[in-house]
Image (cartoon, rainbow, N blue to C red; front, side, top):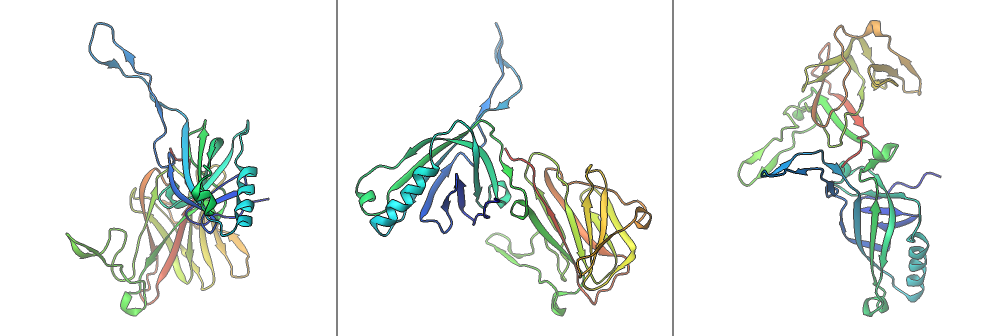
Amino acid sequence: MTPAELEPWAMEFGGLVLGGSSPIVIEEVSGLADLPDVRSNDTELIAYEGLWPGYDWQGGRSIDVMATVNAYSHQELSDVMALVYSALRSTHEEQRLRFRIPGVAQGVEAYVRARLRKRESPIGRRWAAGAPALNMQFVCTDPRIYPVDGPAGRITREMYRGLGASEGGAPSPLVFDAHSGLFIPDDSSAGGSRDAYCRNGSLVARPCTITAYGPMNGVRIRNVTTGAFVGVSALKVEAGQWLSFTANAARDEWVITLGEANGGATEVPRTRWDQGSQFWQLPPGVTQLALSEANENENTQKRAGVSWTPGPFS
């Protein structure tokens, strides 16, 4: 059975949920946003200063979680601690420690493979008051962080083109800074037009899915960062339809599909693509994507979304 998606600021291990709306409140997590231990292979030089540089490799990862149990009766405390005892136990096999913490793994739901090494909950005044501390330590032989499969592990961005803000388009977000005053951020532009700044913080390049929504008279997506583009200028996308650009199984070419409101879809043959269309992935770093229309109509706003599942994080 697929586990339920986590709320923001929540973790799960062995079926026990910490944080979110759980009665177990997370106080602090260390080791999850840190760079794992590095195993150096530098070699000492004989009769000479310094070291001979070797390859650095990541070691394991240790994660410490400090939490507090909030129980309003002796019965509730017993029930919560029963879940704690059943989930947090020593095992020989690693299992998923899932989490969804803004800023870690770009805020998507992700996991590490971990084993429990320590569980502490001192009995004292806090325990008697129904708020015992619960401290845990997890160890991971694989230090990498992996996004989960499915929508919970995907990042989405939107881009717009045309229709000024005074005509009902997307307003340009103004930001105030003590040094700069009011300004428009780099990832926005005036007049209801906005590019998508896709930030891939993972270790590898990842394919993305781009969906442009009708009505549009000819769709073209530009990779502003590299200068590449992909489009079908001769295809009119009606209201209720959408044009989807996804990677093929080999992740070396686009598959372009015209979707219908009734759920049907038709693949657009390569012969109808714009000449010079190129495939790309999102490498680590920032990729700027822009939406344009072959037969520009400024009286209507065009909208497209881009989504991707990042790769592993260190």
